[in-house]
Image 1 (cartoon, rainbow, N blue to C red):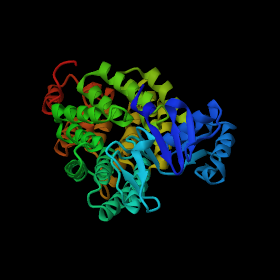
Image 2 (spheres, rainbow, N blue to C red; image 1 turned 30 degrees about the vertical axis):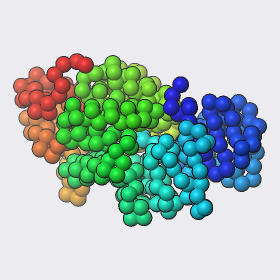
Image 3 (cartoon, one colour; image 1 turned 120 degrees about the vertical axis):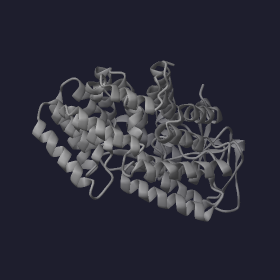
Image 4 (cartoon, rainbow, N blue to C red; image 1 turned 120 degrees about the horizontal axis):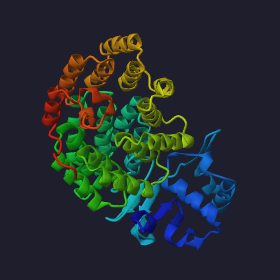
Amino acid sequence: MTVINRATFKFGDFLLIPRERLLLRDNEPLPLTGKAFDLLLVLVRRSGQLVSKDYLSVNISAVRKALGPGGAALIQTVSKSGYRFVAPVVVVESAADVRFTGRVGAPEWNSRSRSSGPALGPDAARAISTDADAYRAYLEGRYAWSQRSETGLRKAIDSFQRAISLDPGFAAAHAGLADCHATLGYLSFVSPADAFPLARRHSLLALKRDGTLAEPHASLGYVKFYFDWDWPGAEAEFRRAISLDSGWAAVHQWYSIFLLAAGGAGEAAYEIKLARERDPLSLAINTDLGFHHYYTRQYAEAIKQLQSVLAMDRDFAPAHLWLGRSYQQIGRFDDALDEFRQVEQSVRDWPVAIAARGSVEAAAGRLEKAKAVLAELQEIAGRRFVTAYGVGLVYAGIGDIEAALTWLDRAFAERSHWLVWLRLDPRFDNLREDPRFSELLDRIKFPQCER
């Protein structure tokens, strides 16, 4: 039984106790059928996130009836899409772990209290402010961060900074800032040098305020992995985060990605499946399972997995991106382009998706269209960051080995985090016999043996 299953969820006057399949209001049990209880548990665990109607049924009315007139308002209906649980949720080991102060909405926290909230990737923080306004700003930040758009990330940064201004000792808000800057860098919205050092700074500030918090250890591991290429240091941070909170799904997710790049595909598969067990409805985790299949060249499995993610949410851009890449590897070029176009419709002028499109055009033998993509990337570079790795990818597809290697050298100079996948990325297979490619791999200091 996992930590999540042992936990008790508190929201308003309610206690939801999964291990006993019990819902209490003011310590009085409320009647719920088994299916209705399971539905409420899904909604509460994904507080702040949209849960597709595909996962729900008529039991939503039974849940609202059990919660009563006031409690029913905690479940928001999103037209034609699904439902969202809108109340802040406290995760505790038992009801005795939470007590409230005289201020409305200002819970008093002991060392075992944790919050769950609107995060796609890490759950909301394990150590929460006693300032209700700071906590509210924190939740707004986590929700905006979970959207993974550049606009959402900028909004999240503002929210976390507001939380810190209200509570300077708010460690979890610094962890949130670390995640925002790391995500800006990971998605190539800004350059690695402008993103990852800030993520490191806020990870260290969070740890200075609370060294027992798992999130900043994971965030620091993310920086050491993707920016420093410090493989032992990154693994130490991920393992430390797991030791502090083994029930947190996202740390297993991030550790699995590290293990895959480090050469431990078997361990990576175990960790990503562990992450999915802890949060089976997470779009990000389920997408990363497809990501694992892609990099282990199990393209049919990747396609099935990513299609299942899109059955949950047709608009989830990362699933479209990795599905397109998987289609490319089995020669379904037009299907791949369809997926990339869907990404570009939701994320305008994103060099990552544009470079992916250029790679497919080149693989399909449409060299003029691939060259047009290179011109498009050059134009975009005049107004925003364009990762050199993506440009190199298009040149590799065209077959211009010299240009591809030149741009990969530039990617190294910019500390491109994409380079940690260079050993596995199938789109660079035509460069692998060149000794300069092997020399570049050596400079990234990949672990030398299979784990």
